[in-house]
Image (cartoon, rainbow, N blue to C red; front, side, top):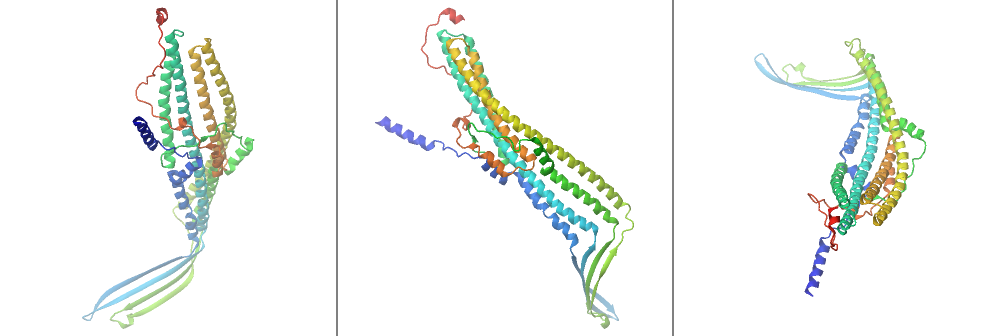
Length: 474
């Protein structure tokens, strides 16, 4: 009775301290965290806010400017043995309205183009964030899959090692089978250490984007079907990349800004015309001379013009500089177009080749499974040796790992293809998110830490049997 009560108490304590299953987050939730915490995206958002002010700054050169100034002085005067103090107060208000300033007009147009450049840069950074989040997310899943497959391979090798030891003890196998299985087991442990380190690195990369340690991640559903890009031809994607890619759009705007900078520089040779309105007032009091005391007001309105004649060749030099910068912007635009087109081609081929690779690896997985079963059966009847079973096991787990990686790479190629074409949006990421499921096996996520030092495999309990001396020597 006492033992039963103790067992019940132990069960309750274990239930209290048992870890609660964490809720798996999906791709869109990770993307939402990145929108809030990613420093690269936050920097682009601040740059967009700053760039939107350039239109106002450029328009200021076309609007009237009002200035006010004044003076206040207190003077002391000595005359005929008498000392007197008097005050002098003056102020001026001037309004200047540009009527003819070609340079100011070009600055206004450049300001509007600069706002468009900032918006294009922000859109490109947002697309890059979608790609970076997707890549970091699937890198973590791939690292988890690699570690999970290695642990499954370790379990299979452990069983094969125990079988080889039993067969050796009863005299039906040589020590070679045991040594081969032990070598494969030691190699699997070493590979697990590397896979565990790679998983931590990938999780750190994702943490850098979302600003916090990633929790349990949703994984791809089993047997998910990937769709080819639409349209299925490569030419529309390349054409869209050459015209709608945000890097290309930004360079097109930069070229237009450079062309207007040439006009603004040449405006240094053009005359200027401004409307001027001035009001001034002067007041003086306390002077010994009565006629000097009093106040006066002056109002004036008119136009003011100026014609530049010679500026030390500064304007000509500035024009030549801006012409060279326009040629640079034109070449940058061509480079951006070629880069976008090349990225679109590579991503399109990556999607199609990835789909073909996924289909091939799915067939290879079925074949590897059949090969493993055949080798196991052959080992049991004596027509296959232990190394054949180990090779078949390794081939199966490698095929499954490559299949998972191929699916992730195909999905990422699809996102990069749309990014190169300038059409990547959050809805595209949401479509990929529909392929995920939060039902993650425990072995795929909660991997215990590897014990330090060499790992010793405990022999299973078997019935000891006297082995003949000849077999022991063998």
